[in-house]
Amino acid sequence: MKELFGNKKFRQMVFVILVGILLIGFITMISRSNSETLSEYAANNPEAAYAETDTSWKDAYKTP
Image 1 (cartoon, rainbow, N blue to C red):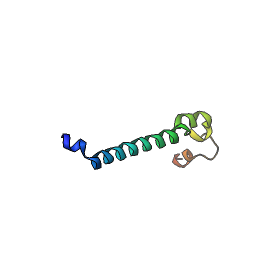
Image 2: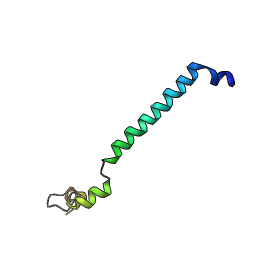
Image 3: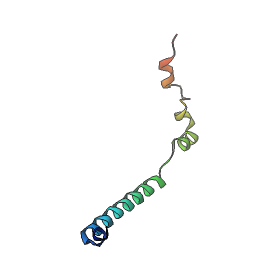
Image 4: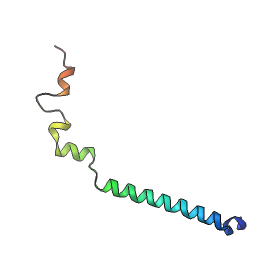
């Protein structure tokens, strides 16, 4: 085990993997910080979210 951690290529590989994980986490954090959740969208746009307009998709399912 000591030989494995002493190996320069192994340390480089572990470092590259950790940097990759941190980079993916950072990109995910940035993309989520500016996004709007479905609950926020529904609160801001109730007529679209709950189909309260005259031409609603709900009308297609009404049977006479």
